[in-house]
Length: 291
Ligand code: GLU
Image (cartoon, rainbow, N blue to C red):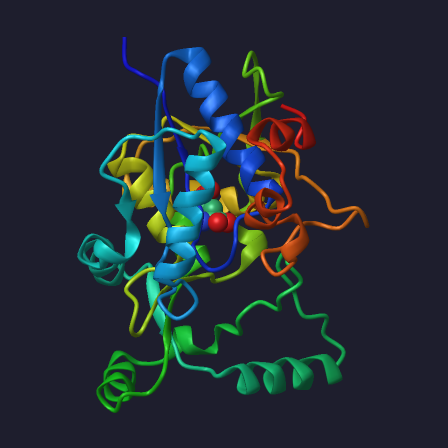
């Protein structure tokens, strides 16, 4: 029998809060109950916002909580070569294109289109789709701009990728925390438009690194917050076009702040370090998150 593998994959770009505690402890509980493995992955591709201090704080908080994980921990910033190799393949297969428009240019393009009465599509986060004009740029022009050091991001050609993917773009989603049953969910990557899969200076993005790492680390069960539910559609598409295995998913409830809003890393009061300093115990944290 193959072991089930769970992972907790925080980004060290702020302090961990109760929402992270719930996610980490739920993964731990499920790994324990199923006799599975628990991995910790440091998602620090954003080298400007992620710092060694936040990472050290994250490890301290998780140890204090009583989380145990396998060593060595995978730190994404140490594996850019892995992501670059996959990116090269996507470039060769013409599934990505360099997108040169700046934020200002995108805004102006959309405003112009909306003035002419056209509703501009937005992704589930409310971000307008990238205008597809760059997709038509001749290869020579792309090369010229890249050689001139023009800023750009590699975007997935969502239409081409969906045409390439197999027909089955569903995933199995557990219906509750006990992981006793799943329901099929239809992935809708098209709702995100041409997402960014890599930057000029960083050969990956959140979506690309997550699917590559989940596959490399043989993660069988992705248990993470409900806020990532629709992003799973993009990740399923990447798995299909890259021929990667398909994990099963559980997108858990979010822990909300006293005002009913989603917790954020900038709200220090629900941060684990602040709770610990105020005298809370790991058991108090478990109770607070309902575990
Ligand atoms: N690194 C992501 C975050 O901190 C989570 C990624 C995932 O669980 O897939 O929000």
